Amino acid sequence: MKKDSRESVAMATARGKASQAVIGIDLGDKQSQYCVLDRKGEVAEEGTLRTTPEGFRQWLQGRKPCRIVVEAGGHSPWVSRLLETGGYQVLVANPCRLPMIYASQKKNDRMDARKLAQLARVDASLLAPIRHRSAPAQADLSVIRARESLVEARTKLINAVRGLVKTSGARVKKCASRSFPKQAGGQVPEILRPAVGPLLETIDRLSEQIRHYDQLLEEMAETRYPETERMSQVPGVGTLTALTFRLTIDDAKRFRRSRDVGGYLGLRPRQQDSGEQTPQLRITKAGDRYLRSTLVNCAHYILGPFGADTDLRRWGLKLCARGGKNAKKRAIVAVARKLAVLLHHLWVCGEVYEPLRNQPVESVAA
Image 1 (cartoon, one colour):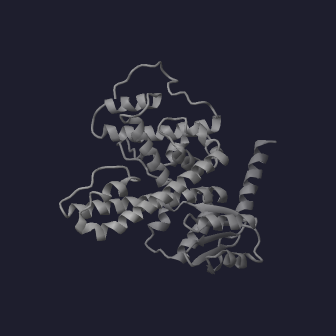
Image 2 (cartoon, helix red, strand yellow):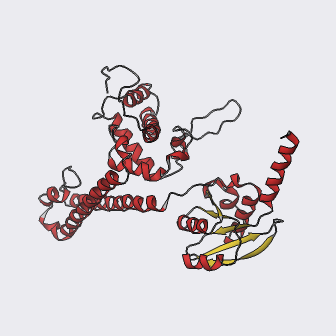
Image 3 (cartoon, helix red, strand yellow):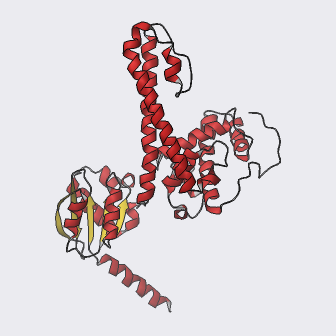
Protein backbone atom coordinates (compact mmCIF):
# COMPACT_ATOMS: atom_id res chain seq x y z
CA MET A 1 0.00 0.00 0.00
CA LYS A 2 1.34 3.42 -0.96
CA LYS A 3 2.01 6.12 1.59
CA ASP A 4 -0.81 8.35 0.28
CA SER A 5 -3.30 5.52 0.55
CA ARG A 6 -2.18 4.71 4.11
CA GLU A 7 -2.63 8.35 5.14
CA SER A 8 -6.05 8.48 3.53
CA VAL A 9 -7.12 5.36 5.46
CA ALA A 10 -5.86 6.87 8.74
CA MET A 11 -7.71 10.14 8.06
CA ALA A 12 -10.88 8.25 7.21
CA THR A 13 -10.61 6.27 10.45
CA ALA A 14 -10.14 9.46 12.46
CA ARG A 15 -13.17 11.05 10.78
CA GLY A 16 -15.18 7.91 11.49
CA LYS A 17 -14.38 8.12 15.19
CA ALA A 18 -15.15 11.84 15.27
CA SER A 19 -18.47 11.25 13.52
CA GLN A 20 -19.76 9.07 16.36
CA ALA A 21 -21.87 10.50 19.14
CA VAL A 22 -20.05 11.05 22.44
CA ILE A 23 -21.60 11.16 25.91
CA GLY A 24 -20.05 12.72 28.98
CA ILE A 25 -21.41 11.83 32.43
CA ASP A 26 -20.59 13.68 35.64
CA LEU A 27 -21.32 11.06 38.31
CA GLY A 28 -23.02 12.22 41.48
CA ASP A 29 -23.95 10.33 44.61
CA LYS A 30 -27.69 10.34 43.88
CA GLN A 31 -28.10 12.12 40.53
CA SER A 32 -25.71 12.22 37.56
CA GLN A 33 -25.59 14.85 34.83
CA TYR A 34 -25.04 13.78 31.22
CA CYS A 35 -24.34 15.58 27.95
CA VAL A 36 -24.68 14.06 24.47
CA LEU A 37 -22.68 15.51 21.57
CA ASP A 38 -23.82 14.67 18.05
CA ARG A 39 -21.61 13.87 15.07
CA LYS A 40 -20.89 17.56 14.50
CA GLY A 41 -19.83 18.08 18.11
CA GLU A 42 -22.91 20.09 19.06
CA VAL A 43 -24.98 19.46 22.18
CA ALA A 44 -27.83 17.16 21.21
CA GLU A 45 -29.18 16.29 24.65
CA GLU A 46 -28.60 17.12 28.30
CA GLY A 47 -30.24 15.90 31.46
CA THR A 48 -29.94 13.94 34.69
CA LEU A 49 -30.37 10.30 35.63
CA ARG A 50 -30.41 8.36 38.87
CA THR A 51 -27.05 6.99 39.95
CA THR A 52 -28.32 3.46 40.40
CA PRO A 53 -27.98 0.33 38.22
CA GLU A 54 -31.69 0.44 37.41
CA GLY A 55 -31.52 4.14 36.60
CA PHE A 56 -28.68 3.58 34.13
CA ARG A 57 -30.44 0.62 32.52
CA GLN A 58 -33.55 2.69 31.90
CA TRP A 59 -31.48 5.57 30.54
CA LEU A 60 -29.62 3.27 28.12
CA GLN A 61 -32.77 1.83 26.57
CA GLY A 62 -32.92 2.71 22.87
CA ARG A 63 -29.45 4.29 22.77
CA LYS A 64 -26.99 3.14 20.15
CA PRO A 65 -23.48 2.04 21.18
CA CYS A 66 -21.11 5.00 21.33
CA ARG A 67 -18.26 6.43 23.36
CA ILE A 68 -19.10 7.32 26.97
CA VAL A 69 -16.72 9.04 29.37
CA VAL A 70 -17.08 9.26 33.16
CA GLU A 71 -14.82 10.61 35.88
CA ALA A 72 -13.09 8.22 38.28
CA GLY A 73 -14.81 8.13 41.65
CA GLY A 74 -16.77 6.00 44.07
CA HIS A 75 -19.43 5.01 41.52
CA SER A 76 -17.23 4.74 38.42
CA PRO A 77 -16.20 1.05 38.88
CA TRP A 78 -19.70 -0.43 38.72
CA VAL A 79 -20.91 2.20 36.23
CA SER A 80 -18.09 1.44 33.78
CA ARG A 81 -18.69 -2.31 34.04
CA LEU A 82 -22.42 -1.86 33.47
CA LEU A 83 -21.84 0.31 30.40
CA GLU A 84 -19.26 -2.07 28.94
CA THR A 85 -21.67 -4.99 29.18
CA GLY A 86 -24.06 -2.91 27.04
CA GLY A 87 -21.50 -2.68 24.24
CA TYR A 88 -20.39 0.91 24.88
CA GLN A 89 -16.83 2.17 24.64
CA VAL A 90 -16.17 3.48 28.15
CA LEU A 91 -13.40 5.87 29.16
CA VAL A 92 -12.76 6.57 32.84
CA ALA A 93 -11.09 9.98 33.11
CA ASN A 94 -8.50 10.74 35.76
CA PRO A 95 -9.87 13.82 37.60
CA CYS A 96 -6.42 14.78 38.88
CA ARG A 97 -5.25 15.29 35.29
CA LEU A 98 -8.10 17.56 34.24
CA PRO A 99 -7.29 21.08 35.49
CA MET A 100 -9.71 22.62 32.99
CA ILE A 101 -12.48 20.95 35.02
CA TYR A 102 -11.41 21.03 38.68
CA ALA A 103 -9.74 24.47 38.37
CA SER A 104 -12.44 26.07 36.25
CA GLN A 105 -13.89 29.41 37.32
CA LYS A 106 -17.30 28.26 36.11
CA LYS A 107 -17.76 24.79 37.55
CA ASN A 108 -21.00 22.86 37.83
CA ASP A 109 -22.21 19.35 37.00
CA ARG A 110 -23.69 20.41 33.66
CA MET A 111 -20.47 22.07 32.46
CA ASP A 112 -18.33 19.18 33.74
CA ALA A 113 -20.35 16.64 31.74
CA ARG A 114 -20.07 18.80 28.61
CA LYS A 115 -16.29 19.22 28.97
CA LEU A 116 -15.83 15.48 29.45
CA ALA A 117 -17.72 14.81 26.22
CA GLN A 118 -15.78 17.48 24.33
CA LEU A 119 -12.40 16.12 25.47
CA ALA A 120 -13.39 12.56 24.59
CA ARG A 121 -14.44 13.68 21.11
CA VAL A 122 -11.26 15.66 20.38
CA ASP A 123 -8.56 13.43 21.90
CA ALA A 124 -9.20 10.68 24.44
CA SER A 125 -5.60 10.83 25.67
CA LEU A 126 -6.34 14.26 27.19
CA LEU A 127 -8.50 12.45 29.75
CA ALA A 128 -5.54 10.37 30.99
CA PRO A 129 -7.94 7.38 31.14
CA ILE A 130 -7.47 4.80 33.87
CA ARG A 131 -8.41 1.13 34.15
CA HIS A 132 -10.55 -0.16 36.99
CA ARG A 133 -9.72 -3.52 38.48
CA SER A 134 -12.05 -6.46 37.94
CA ALA A 135 -15.08 -7.04 40.15
CA PRO A 136 -13.60 -10.15 41.89
CA ALA A 137 -10.35 -8.31 42.61
CA GLN A 138 -12.29 -5.32 43.96
CA ALA A 139 -14.33 -7.60 46.24
CA ASP A 140 -11.21 -9.31 47.60
CA LEU A 141 -9.46 -5.98 48.04
CA SER A 142 -12.42 -4.84 50.15
CA VAL A 143 -11.39 -7.44 52.73
CA ILE A 144 -8.02 -5.70 53.08
CA ARG A 145 -9.73 -2.29 53.29
CA ALA A 146 -12.06 -3.58 56.00
CA ARG A 147 -9.13 -4.96 57.98
CA GLU A 148 -7.32 -1.64 57.70
CA SER A 149 -10.39 0.16 59.07
CA LEU A 150 -10.34 -2.07 62.14
CA VAL A 151 -6.61 -1.53 62.61
CA GLU A 152 -7.08 2.24 62.48
CA ALA A 153 -9.96 2.06 64.95
CA ARG A 154 -7.89 -0.09 67.35
CA THR A 155 -4.95 2.32 67.12
CA LYS A 156 -7.17 5.29 67.96
CA LEU A 157 -8.64 3.50 70.96
CA ILE A 158 -5.20 2.47 72.24
CA ASN A 159 -3.99 6.06 71.97
CA ALA A 160 -7.14 7.22 73.77
CA VAL A 161 -6.48 4.81 76.65
CA ARG A 162 -2.88 5.95 76.94
CA GLY A 163 -3.96 9.59 77.00
CA LEU A 164 -6.60 9.00 79.67
CA VAL A 165 -4.16 7.12 81.89
CA LYS A 166 -1.59 9.91 81.63
CA THR A 167 -4.06 12.40 83.06
CA SER A 168 -3.86 10.55 86.38
CA GLY A 169 -0.07 10.51 86.47
CA ALA A 170 0.28 6.86 85.42
CA ARG A 171 1.58 5.39 82.17
CA VAL A 172 0.90 2.23 80.17
CA LYS A 173 4.12 0.48 79.15
CA LYS A 174 4.88 -0.23 75.51
CA CYS A 175 3.55 -3.52 74.22
CA ALA A 176 2.09 -5.13 71.13
CA SER A 177 -1.38 -4.02 70.07
CA ARG A 178 -2.84 -7.51 70.44
CA SER A 179 -1.66 -7.82 74.05
CA PHE A 180 -2.53 -4.24 74.99
CA PRO A 181 -5.84 -5.00 76.84
CA LYS A 182 -4.13 -7.57 79.05
CA GLN A 183 -1.05 -5.45 79.72
CA ALA A 184 -2.96 -2.22 80.30
CA GLY A 185 -5.58 -3.88 82.51
CA GLY A 186 -3.18 -4.10 85.43
CA GLN A 187 -1.74 -0.61 84.94
CA VAL A 188 -4.93 1.44 84.82
CA PRO A 189 -5.65 3.35 88.06
CA GLU A 190 -8.75 2.18 89.89
CA ILE A 191 -10.44 5.56 89.55
CA LEU A 192 -10.28 5.30 85.73
CA ARG A 193 -11.53 1.73 85.36
CA PRO A 194 -15.19 2.73 84.72
CA ALA A 195 -14.05 4.89 81.81
CA VAL A 196 -11.23 2.75 80.42
CA GLY A 197 -12.67 -0.73 80.99
CA PRO A 198 -15.16 -0.67 78.06
CA LEU A 199 -12.43 0.66 75.77
CA LEU A 200 -10.15 -2.26 76.65
CA GLU A 201 -12.97 -4.72 75.93
CA THR A 202 -13.58 -3.09 72.55
CA ILE A 203 -9.88 -3.23 71.71
CA ASP A 204 -9.84 -6.93 72.56
CA ARG A 205 -12.83 -7.61 70.28
CA LEU A 206 -11.22 -5.62 67.46
CA SER A 207 -8.07 -7.72 67.78
CA GLU A 208 -10.17 -10.87 67.42
CA GLN A 209 -11.78 -9.52 64.24
CA ILE A 210 -8.38 -8.55 62.84
CA ARG A 211 -7.11 -12.07 63.47
CA HIS A 212 -10.14 -13.40 61.62
CA TYR A 213 -9.30 -11.18 58.63
CA ASP A 214 -5.66 -12.34 58.74
CA GLN A 215 -6.76 -15.97 58.49
CA LEU A 216 -9.12 -15.10 55.65
CA LEU A 217 -6.34 -13.35 53.74
CA GLU A 218 -3.98 -16.30 54.22
CA GLU A 219 -6.57 -18.67 52.79
CA MET A 220 -7.32 -16.28 49.94
CA ALA A 221 -3.64 -15.98 48.97
CA GLU A 222 -3.10 -19.73 49.11
CA THR A 223 -6.19 -20.79 47.14
CA ARG A 224 -6.83 -17.96 44.66
CA TYR A 225 -3.59 -16.01 44.28
CA PRO A 226 -0.64 -18.45 44.38
CA GLU A 227 1.62 -15.85 42.72
CA THR A 228 1.76 -14.00 46.06
CA GLU A 229 3.98 -16.79 47.38
CA ARG A 230 6.72 -15.70 44.96
CA MET A 231 6.42 -12.11 46.19
CA SER A 232 6.62 -13.22 49.83
CA GLN A 233 10.11 -14.58 49.17
CA VAL A 234 11.45 -11.05 49.60
CA PRO A 235 12.41 -10.42 53.26
CA GLY A 236 10.05 -7.86 54.76
CA VAL A 237 7.16 -8.73 52.43
CA GLY A 238 4.37 -10.74 54.03
CA THR A 239 1.08 -12.10 52.81
CA LEU A 240 -0.74 -8.83 53.44
CA THR A 241 1.71 -6.78 51.35
CA ALA A 242 1.89 -9.35 48.54
CA LEU A 243 -1.87 -9.70 48.37
CA THR A 244 -2.40 -5.93 48.46
CA PHE A 245 0.08 -5.52 45.60
CA ARG A 246 -1.54 -8.30 43.58
CA LEU A 247 -5.11 -7.04 43.97
CA THR A 248 -4.30 -3.36 43.49
CA ILE A 249 -2.41 -3.95 40.24
CA ASP A 250 -4.85 -6.74 39.24
CA ASP A 251 -3.39 -7.24 35.75
CA ALA A 252 0.39 -7.56 35.51
CA LYS A 253 0.33 -7.07 31.73
CA ARG A 254 -1.00 -3.55 32.03
CA PHE A 255 2.64 -2.42 32.39
CA ARG A 256 5.04 -2.86 29.50
CA ARG A 257 8.02 -2.66 31.88
CA SER A 258 8.26 -3.42 35.59
CA ARG A 259 9.89 -0.01 36.08
CA ASP A 260 6.59 1.68 35.23
CA VAL A 261 5.02 0.40 38.47
CA GLY A 262 6.92 2.93 40.61
CA GLY A 263 5.44 5.88 38.74
CA TYR A 264 1.97 4.30 38.80
CA LEU A 265 2.09 4.11 42.60
CA GLY A 266 3.28 7.70 43.01
CA LEU A 267 6.82 6.80 44.14
CA ARG A 268 8.47 8.74 41.32
CA PRO A 269 9.75 12.30 42.02
CA ARG A 270 7.89 15.18 40.43
CA GLN A 271 9.58 16.84 37.50
CA GLN A 272 9.48 20.57 36.84
CA ASP A 273 12.63 21.27 34.84
CA SER A 274 13.04 24.64 33.17
CA GLY A 275 16.11 25.58 31.19
CA GLU A 276 19.18 24.61 33.21
CA GLN A 277 17.23 24.24 36.45
CA THR A 278 16.43 20.70 37.59
CA PRO A 279 15.04 21.07 41.13
CA GLN A 280 14.69 18.04 43.39
CA LEU A 281 11.00 17.70 44.15
CA ARG A 282 8.93 15.34 46.26
CA ILE A 283 7.25 12.23 44.90
CA THR A 284 3.97 12.57 43.04
CA LYS A 285 1.95 10.45 45.52
CA ALA A 286 -0.33 9.38 42.70
CA GLY A 287 -2.07 6.02 42.63
CA ASP A 288 -3.20 3.91 45.56
CA ARG A 289 -2.31 5.48 48.92
CA TYR A 290 -2.63 2.31 51.00
CA LEU A 291 -0.32 0.22 48.80
CA ARG A 292 2.21 3.04 48.70
CA SER A 293 2.27 3.33 52.49
CA THR A 294 2.52 -0.48 52.79
CA LEU A 295 5.59 -0.55 50.53
CA VAL A 296 7.15 2.30 52.50
CA ASN A 297 6.64 0.32 55.73
CA CYS A 298 8.36 -2.66 54.10
CA ALA A 299 11.25 -0.38 53.12
CA HIS A 300 11.60 0.74 56.74
CA TYR A 301 11.95 -2.89 57.79
CA ILE A 302 14.41 -3.72 54.99
CA LEU A 303 16.72 -0.85 56.00
CA GLY A 304 16.11 -1.35 59.72
CA PRO A 305 18.22 -3.31 62.22
CA PHE A 306 16.33 -6.55 61.60
CA GLY A 307 16.46 -6.42 57.79
CA ALA A 308 18.10 -9.38 56.03
CA ASP A 309 21.27 -8.95 53.98
CA THR A 310 20.02 -8.52 50.41
CA ASP A 311 20.95 -6.56 47.30
CA LEU A 312 18.02 -4.24 47.98
CA ARG A 313 19.18 -3.53 51.52
CA ARG A 314 22.77 -2.89 50.44
CA TRP A 315 21.61 -0.54 47.71
CA GLY A 316 19.44 1.38 50.18
CA LEU A 317 22.22 1.64 52.75
CA LYS A 318 24.51 3.13 50.13
CA LEU A 319 21.92 5.83 49.51
CA CYS A 320 21.75 6.53 53.24
CA ALA A 321 25.54 6.75 53.45
CA ARG A 322 25.61 9.63 51.00
CA GLY A 323 24.49 11.88 53.81
CA GLY A 324 22.87 15.19 53.24
CA LYS A 325 19.50 16.48 54.29
CA ASN A 326 16.73 13.88 54.37
CA ALA A 327 19.06 11.16 53.05
CA LYS A 328 17.33 8.43 55.07
CA LYS A 329 13.85 9.50 53.94
CA ARG A 330 14.86 9.55 50.31
CA ALA A 331 16.47 6.14 50.66
CA ILE A 332 13.26 4.75 52.14
CA VAL A 333 11.22 6.01 49.20
CA ALA A 334 13.79 4.75 46.71
CA VAL A 335 13.79 1.28 48.28
CA ALA A 336 9.97 1.23 48.26
CA ARG A 337 9.99 2.13 44.55
CA LYS A 338 12.56 -0.55 43.74
CA LEU A 339 10.62 -3.06 45.85
CA ALA A 340 7.52 -2.44 43.75
CA VAL A 341 9.54 -3.09 40.60
CA LEU A 342 10.94 -6.29 42.12
CA LEU A 343 7.52 -7.61 43.14
CA HIS A 344 6.12 -7.01 39.66
CA HIS A 345 9.12 -8.75 38.08
CA LEU A 346 8.70 -11.81 40.33
CA TRP A 347 5.00 -11.87 39.49
CA VAL A 348 5.53 -11.72 35.73
CA CYS A 349 8.62 -13.90 35.36
CA GLY A 350 7.90 -16.43 38.10
CA GLU A 351 11.57 -16.54 39.09
CA VAL A 352 12.96 -17.71 42.41
CA TYR A 353 14.13 -14.72 44.42
CA GLU A 354 17.87 -14.50 44.99
CA PRO A 355 18.66 -12.11 47.87
CA LEU A 356 22.30 -11.55 46.78
CA ARG A 357 22.17 -11.91 43.05
CA ASN A 358 24.25 -8.91 42.02
CA GLN A 359 27.23 -9.24 44.36
CA PRO A 360 29.01 -11.79 46.57
CA VAL A 361 28.07 -12.24 50.20
CA GLU A 362 29.85 -9.80 52.46
CA SER A 363 29.04 -8.13 55.74
CA VAL A 364 27.52 -4.68 55.53
CA ALA A 365 27.28 -2.38 58.52
CA ALA A 366 23.77 -1.19 59.24
